[in-house]
Image (tube, rainbow, N blue to C red; front, side):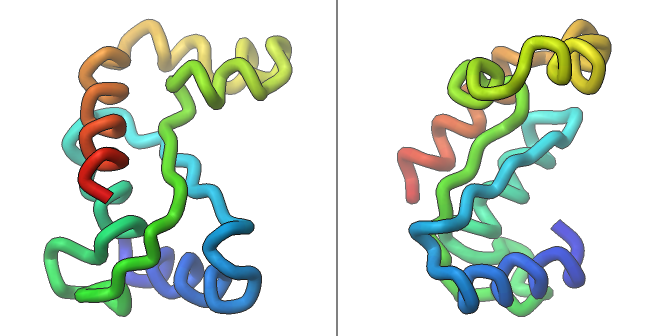
Length: 104
């Protein structure tokens, strides 16, 4: 997660409270999705941004997870995500996201 997005997430969390924030990730690879998820839950693992050492404990999901997929209009999901879903390793992404949530 780049430094600018870290700041946005931190500012929004400070303003609205962590109980009102859900981070939705759309990264194409499990590793990059996991790094972003780790950043908004337990803190920036690279210690480069404003979330270095800052545990926000935010709820975080990937767009291909059933909990999110079922909450999105079928038409919107089909138009915006379904083509990418066919080429992503969704099982690996979901496994990574579940691991990060368990650690947090």
